[in-house]
Length: 494
Image (cartoon, rainbow, N blue to C red; front, side, top):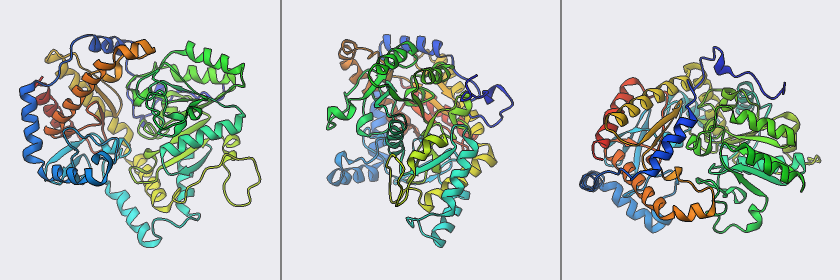
């Protein structure tokens, strides 16, 4: 037996798992195909006028602030997760399951900062520890602090594939470092990622993003040489992965295979239940390192991450915003000790190493937040409770969709809930011809997704781009049932 494959804790009494069941991916694919083959079902034009009035009449301060922002910020938006149709709302308060904007409107927060706030926003026990740390030490010293050791120990204790941890400033930085580390350790150059997956915005990985087989479509400003050794293969296509690994072996070999373990874009294109185990076996066969990008799944799918859920040990684990419970400067590379020793830091190091850095990496503020956030996740069983909230929400959405006879698709992996209404990210782009063929349709479906997101917002629901929902410990049954009533009101406008 491969020693890097461990028993799946979900098959045993693992009560802390954040995922109660894995969706039927073949059934989902059939539903995805049906969704994109039929005409779109957007919000009616007359109903969209009412949605627009909400923004015009009740969000005047946000609108004025967004106009000011446009004069000093490109496009008026700093964050790619900021939903900006018809204009970005400005928020002044985050607490638990809710957000309040600058005009005093209150919303159910299903964005949760893009996923890291599993405990709910602005969680008081963690906030208290951060305040104490700032009073005693300040946010940064540039030197060793007790909490970076304690945080690393805690992550190593929970994640099966992490024996050592090097802290960095973000998920993007961690992926950059992981690729450099894999190439240093193996002496190889080729990197294979799954098409459609997002691994940050570094030059070498702005490739095949969001839609599979789109290659350099979004690589504006990036020299071709930067992606010259980056490849992509279709999700769930193990035969294609094997072909690429075989071809690369003839020209030096593959350094690493990168996966989002739930599937590209946090499971927007979900992988088969056994996919990660099979990728692990192919990596072992061809001597490539397996890298799990757990920026979203780390702790949210359980304290052992997706690697614990699937029972598959990656060689390298990438962590990001999940690591500090929503506090800034959150990123890390973890992995086997023999690999991680190539990330030795400090002055006077003579060993061969993959150079990474960052003055604010491992700062005391982020480390104290991460340490106490993970302790609170342990104490409260946050992953399992947030996962049950996701189950309740998804089941309710499916009931509404069936009752109203809509073609929409809702499914979840615990607290990561997907709601596909336009299907823009599900279009077939597996060849250049198919990509060109759906280009205009993709624009129409993207606009529909924007309008759906605006309608959710006008009904007090904040989502990620109108198609993804993150639940948290703060989402009680009452919060979820309130949200379902609001979603039902939106679907009545279709």
